[in-house]
Length: 155
Image 1 (cartoon, rainbow, N blue to C red):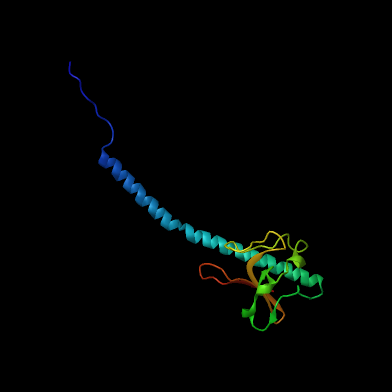
Image 2: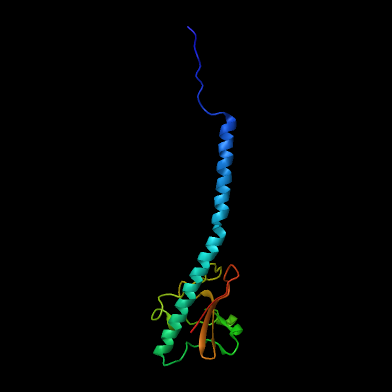
């Protein structure tokens, strides 16, 4: 009686070829998705929402105050002199938190990539957003926008 060996399976070359093909396809998918760009786009979308929230709160305050803006918003003819919304007034930031929170906005939003003191209360915060009043119109901006975008809102 003679034994016959029935070898079934894959050779090492076949397995390596499949692994290489899967790695190439995964690399193509990762490049196509580009997670870094997706995150930057999401951050910019959040910035648009945040500056609109701040601007709406300032406008609502102005309506309730018969046209007066919150104290400290710089009024100039040059929008480049905007001030950062934050609690460090000794560094040129303007503190409008107590004026707007909680009546006009539940909490001040802050830049998604801000590394400083993020908003937790009205005592120590830096939103990363700027505000200025130019010729009677209020402009809120996100100076740290990514992907070379300019994100501002004016009312």
